[in-house]
Image 1: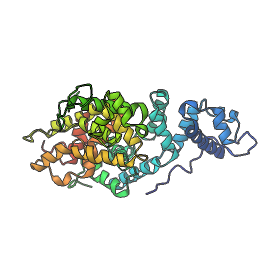
Image 2: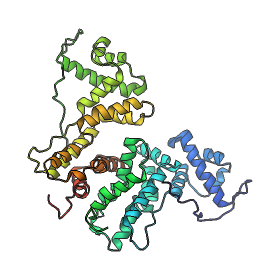
Image 3: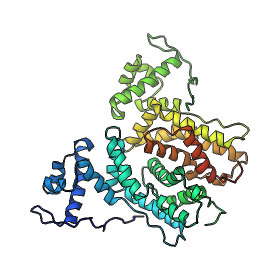
Length: 214
Length: 214
């Protein structure tokens, strides 16, 4: 069930840490990302400081300000870095499998600390509306907007499904059902349930129900 | 958009209030139901007491114990009383309209104090698992299990849709998408969005997509 992702991305700049730690840029950024999630869990969205993040990361405040203007920008960067990217089959010949894998990436992501950070932002969106907006724009929209949508667009672009069917509602079916099943059971959906979501809800919505072409 | 419901149910027993208030049974129960929601909002699930509820309702603790064994039972009763009941067209000739109305009942319910009480129970389900279980059994399951499911079963029983299509996933599509749209927009879906959910997700899932029979 576990889907690995995002663990081996390179940072845009491979700069040396300026502090006494001698950590290279990538390691330092990783430490700061872990620190910002720790800071969030400890003090909450409204009380995060650059100082607190720097202390947890064991680095100097200046090395944070060199990259990010505020604690919330550090947080968004940490969330973006771990956000999964769907990779559909290049030949577009396994829509069902690609959709199940996309939902598997969502389920795996739900168990990460960055998913907890996203939940914290959503819970406090009325107090921090600009942060919630930035989350959608810089993270969600930058990675295809919705789980399954990158896959669906890939198949639509290759004539395998009708692009007219890819409405906002249809793009939301997968995420909506994964969240709903997780809410009711207080546990992540298993592989069989993900397959049921694809077979019984997403495929019929794009015109590929039972009896239709697979 | 607003759908009225549940406001004129009779209580099972029409007994007189025993206290100085001289309120009749139905009025008293109504006052106690309002009081238990106020008590929950004020002190939280873990600290509700019969005494606190009685004080807010302006009645004696004994009149609570006559009907309910615990504060959580009062709460479940208050939630159950306001939970909407779907009423499909008897002739089963307006599936689309019946489904949109069912989702409208869900949206209207989401704005009620009892929906906030349900959210509180869900948020603390790990601390009060027996309460969450009772919520599903005594309230949700007692009213058809899911919004839209009463309607879908009504049409399946009359041969209008294939009963084999009414899987748990399909029964969850409507609720799942209403919750998802509300989460993303931080606002209840409007009538047009409810129609889109029905047309683009629920009807195709029961085999009645565009081109199919309506």
